[in-house]
Length: 283
Image 1 (cartoon, helix red, strand yellow):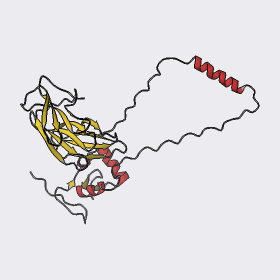
Image 2 (cartoon, one colour):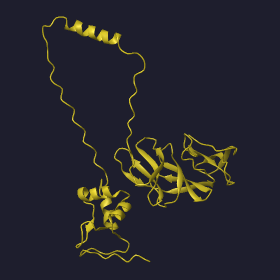
Image 3 (cartoon, one colour):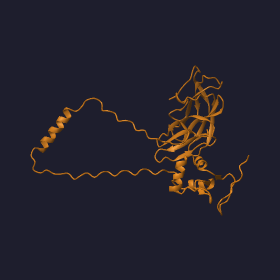
Image 4 (cartoon, helix red, strand yellow):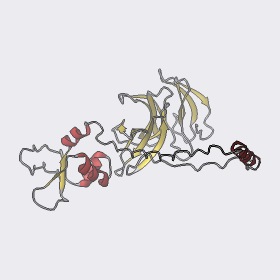
């Protein structure tokens, strides 16, 4: 049954079909955030969420057009960084004029420390894990940009929609690059930072290698074939250092034993490098 057009509960607000989001969950899904984050944005960043004139305050609604206008504001979804803690002030040094032998005592102390210092390798510092994403769902195939300022990844949300996103490591800004929601795998950033190569599933046992321009999200199909998904074992698509070729584990006969192919990025010409004697994983 078709959803009836929304009816505005406030005077002066136009009712546009399919423009209204009727619950916190729908608003959060539209913004690709969790409900708690959306509630916080309403309180601290004036996210345009409306409440019904009658009924409990938990009954809310919003319009997609108003949210889109709000998103166009600078730093609308940017999370504030924690202010840096001020450095503690050091107490003024105390001078000891007229104390004989102070330099000799200090030198003796340093000599003892040097002689009895522990030998061997220093104890390594523990690694600190810094979370980059917090979306609901699954994030796959992360790949750094060549300048290490961004990370690209494939995100499957709670509804099973799968698309490619780029995220700034400095400020956490997230930008979607695809919108078709189809299954994808094997994401790899080009050496010049302008292109992302990935595999889009067209049908069972058949995928296409797609070149995605990062600047304008334009796509170009490079080749098709059986391309395995090795999420736990390694990648099956990689770039040459000069960015002229794609190396892919692919088979055009739809078997389960693809061989390595070198594919020219400009022309799509493919040359087989290794026979299909097993699974080939690239690093």
